[in-house]
Figure (cartoon, rainbow, N blue to C red):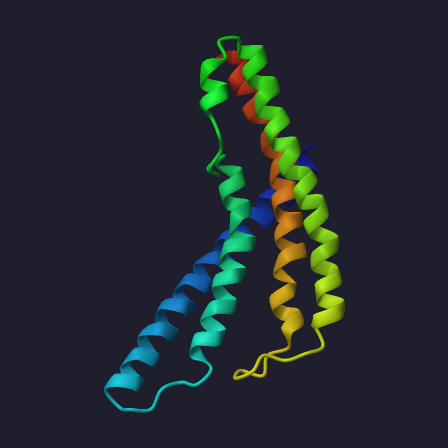
Length: 164
C-alpha cells in the first residue's frame, strides 16, 4: 500500500498543479481579452471558447481534489439522523459506492466521446476536441483513485467518532 500511496500522492499533486495552472490561465486570458476588447477594440476571437474548455477541465479533473477532502455536496441529513457509528459508516460507504458506479459509467462514455467526437475541431480555436473529451476519463480515473484511498480512511474515522 505504501507504493500506491506514493503514486497517489504524485497524482494528487499533479491534479493540484494542473488546477492551479488552469485557474491562472483562465484569469489571464479573461483579463487580457477584456482589456483587448474594450481598450484596444481587438478581442481574442478564441478566448471565450478556450476559457470554457479550461473550465470543464478544472471542474472534471479538479473534482478529484474535492473527493480527497470529502468536500463534495452530499445528503448528510440521513447520516446526521443515524446515531450508530457503524450505521453512519455503512451509509457513508454506500453513498460513495453509488458515486463510484457513476464514475465507472463516465469513464467508457468519455472514451467513446473521444473516439466519436474527438476528430472534430473547435470552431474558433481549431483545438482538436479529443483534448476536451479527455477530461472525462481522466477525471473519472483521478476520482476513482481518490475514492480508493480516502473512503477506507474516512470510514475508519467515522467508526472511531473522529468524523461525522
